[in-house]
Length: 304
Image 1 (cartoon, rainbow, N blue to C red):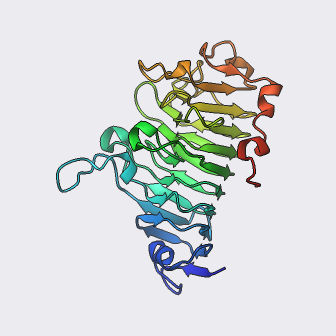
Image 2 (image 1 turned 45 degrees about the vertical axis):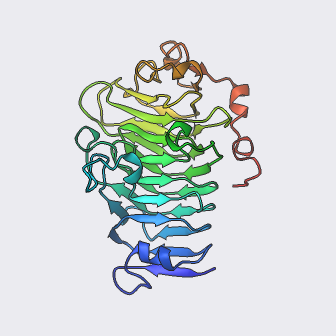
């Protein structure tokens, strides 16, 4: 296994992108403390990124959806990620660093993705992911956008800090977030935020699963939601999590006038004070329901 060091001075490479270009499959790239302003794309299997310190090892860029190509058309959401991990990068791992998109608020710049992880069997541990609208894109995007059949993208996030305000964890992946802190950055108006926007395909049995996570924020009381369905059959559950009074009493929201909530599966357990006020289409999970979301059921033959 090849080991590569990235540092402003004294490393094998001064940029992460150069290290990725040089790396072979299953290489480990160690990144020293510093701010690396570059747009990074990984399309090789088994690449591991390890930062020296989560708060002081920062991968950052600032592309945003309203930016224009030379032809005058906006680049759109999916060209904005500071870090892109492609379908070919199966087995990707990232630890102990920050990935940031610093373009600004969505009502000014549109969507601005920090990390877009599109591969199967990805592990992200002790990382900070930060932006405003559409911070983290997990797994495939809808078939009506890509024209491609849905595919399985299993991902595991452990002990991470993830912040944003509108749909800031989104996509079609089968993703377990365990022991993470989810922070809703306040914004004016109502609603003040949506944590998730899943687009789980009908053929994919499990979407976003949050276990033992904390949801908090800096917005107004009762004006944010844990999520809304981006497409029909979206699936999101919060199990043994806590959230403060920033969350709206209905817990989850419909998506405007769409009917996606009629086919989706959204639920939570615990948080007794929200069970009476939750939206009528939101499930209260029983102990038996929660059994479905053990790791072996979520990930199948992929052992974490």
